Length: 392
Ligand SMILES: Cc1ncc(COP(=O)(O)O)c(C=O)c1O
Image 1 (cartoon, protein in one colour):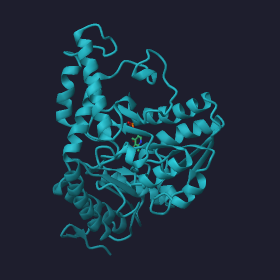
Image 2 (cartoon, protein in one colour; image 1 turned 90 degrees about the vertical axis):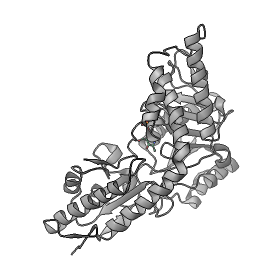
Image 3 (cartoon, helix red, strand yellow; image 1 turned 180 degrees about the vertical axis):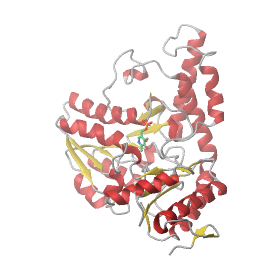
Image 4 (spheres, protein in one colour; image 1 turned 120 degrees about the horizontal axis):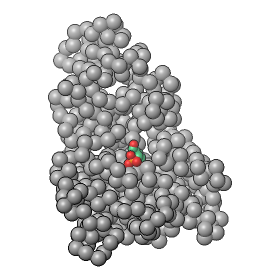
C-alpha cells in the first residue's frame, strides 16, 4: 500500500470532521444571511460559534475573523485589501516587505501590487531558510506599509521568529501579515503576543475540509473588500457562507488542539529517525534549519542521483513531494533561495508526516528511499542491514 507522507500538500479530512459537517449539507440547509426562519438562524449560530473557535485558536478577536475559501484567498484579501484601504485613506506609505521563501499565495498578490505602484522588497533568507533580522530591520522603514512573513514554510518547515518580526513592525508602524497555513493546528500561535495584524488559515492543512479557511485581522486594521456582492462577512467577503465547511474547520481546529502537542512530539521523534537513517546513506543535505522547523517536516536533497528517476521509483511506494512541489513542475523557489541548483532541487524529497504516520510508515519510507538510491547509485539495491543501506 502506498504510504502517504505529503501532509504539507494536504491532510486527510478527519472522519470526525466529516461527521460534524454531515448534517449541514442537506438536513440543516439554512442560509445564514437570511435571519427570517429557524434553519437560517441555526446556520447563522453555527457560523458564529465557528468564528469564535477560529478566533480563540489564534488568540484573535471573533469580529476579526473573515471566512474564506482557504489561505490563498485569505492572503489576497489581507495584502490587496490592506493596500487598497491604505490608498483609499490617502496613506503615504507604499512599501511592502517579504521573504523570497514565501508561498506563491503571498508572493503573487504582492507582485500584483508592485505592478500597481507599490514598492516591493523581497529579502533573501539565510542558507538555513531563516530571515536575516538585520536585513529585515534595514528594509522596514517609515515608508513600509506592510511586512509579510509566514509562520512555517510549506516546503522546508522553517519557523520564522514571529515575535521579533512583530515587535519590529510595531516599532516602525507597519502592518504584520503572517501566512499561518502550515502552522495553525500544528503549533500554538497567539496573534496579540506575536504582534500579528493579519493571519491566514487553511482548513485542509489541519485535517479539515478543502475549500475553507479564514483571514483573522486585528480589529481596527482597515481592509478593502476584494470580492463584491451580498455584503456577507461584514462586507469584507461577499458570497453565501459555506456552512458545512466552516463547521468542518471548527471541528478540525478543536481536534487539532486536542492532540497538537502529543502529535508534534511523536512525529518529531519519527522524523528524527527518518533523517538519521537516510543521512546514513551518504550525500544527503538537509534543507532548512535543523531545529527551528515543524516537527513533522523533513526536506533533503539526495546527492548522486537523477531527481526525475528518484521520484519515478519512490512514487510506487510513498507519496512525497519533490523540489518542484508547489510550482507545478518548475524548480522550487524555496530551495533556490537556499542556494540549491536546479538538479539538486529536482532530487529533493519533502516528507510531511501526519496523524496516521507511525513506525511502519517510516520504515517503508526508509526502505523505499534506501532501495531507490542504491538502484540509482549502484545499479541495483544492495543488501539492507537494520533498515540501512551498506552504501559504497
Ligand atoms: C504556506 C501556504 N500558504 C498558502 C497556501 C494556500 O492554501 P489554500 O490551499 O488553502 O489556498 C498553502 C497551501 O499550499 C501553503 O502551504
